[in-house]
Length: 73
Image 1 (spheres, rainbow, N blue to C red):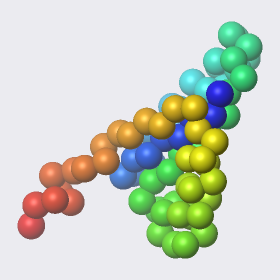
Image 2: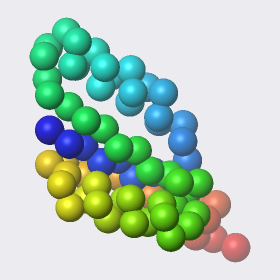
Image 3: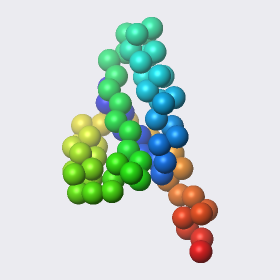
């Protein structure tokens, strides 16, 4: 299973990586994880990589895609 996570910041990354490793190790889940945040999508190469990951994703999860700080002046 290929999971893509989209978020504004990278705060979720460490916990998601640990959880994915535990699922692989303890439950033999065939899982790959791609995590994207604002920093990884700051250039064309990042967006191209996201497009490739989305094309093969089994699940796409969005977290904190909108923040009041970003949508209000």
